[in-house]
Length: 375
Image 1 (tube, rainbow, N blue to C red):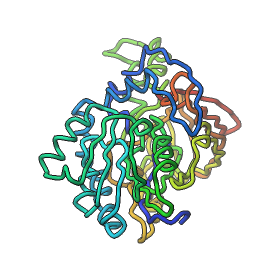
Image 2: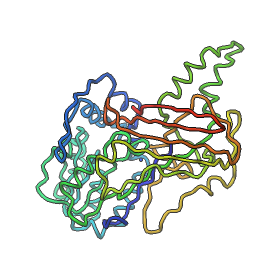
Image 3: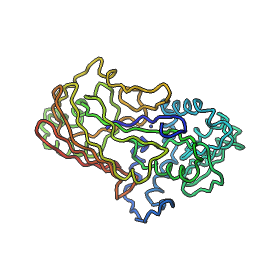
Image 4: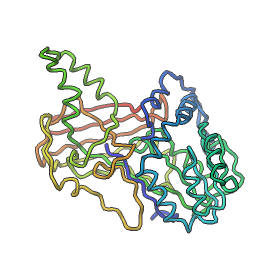
């Protein structure tokens, strides 16, 4: 599964891993969720899972990793400057502001006022950063969920870095939808305006060899009895790793496109896409087949009018990396061999910020199903 490329475009519709560390995902474990009925358009109740999620963003390492991602931070800055004419003199809302860097970029671009909202206590540091940069007259830092804070005016622009692993992990997009429906003026600007999730079959034999084949012969000792446990341990959950375009066997398929101006919360509860791939290369458990032109041939065309933050394997790596769903038993693919099936992403009943993944696939006359949870 390949993460997306958000598009930053103008405000007239239609026209990077957020569980940044293993600790962020693990902070949820062991909590008991209190099931409460959502009363839309009222805010969803803040659960113990939400509190753990917000607490995880209090750690400096999370923000250091995000800011040091030059693709991420540089693309946001470029988008703000591209649309400076729509930001200058206007009111901006930064949802999930973190250290306040995007809010400050907007203020420096001439925004009249910026509301920088974050439910994590990192907002306390953001407020000091704003003061240190003499922007307190423009940037108002608010500690709390965007669903709970009180903003007494409509805004012209909403900006947010809401994307998680595999685009939807962490389920932050509903907060953007809430802010849009409550405060965004008609014809207002949302950055990013669009986002797309892609998937494609890949080959990554080095990873399989490192985690699985290692156990076949350990210092001359047969340890094949460890193989089932090793496969479960290594591949039960989605893996966040960096691959390259040479690992990708086919053209990617679009699983979902998000239009931030029109999408509704209900559309995020379950997403299904059917796929049918024809392998452009050979893929097997024993060898990777590389093509000098494979990365270039699978590159997606980007419009000159749109700034794209890409997390595709053939582009510069980001802290989101790629989300890989490893099969317990590799499929040996020949060139032009068909692999087809469906993928369904649903919000977890255990915790809506988790994702359930149901992958059905068939190839060579055999069919399989893999179910996984992104925690």
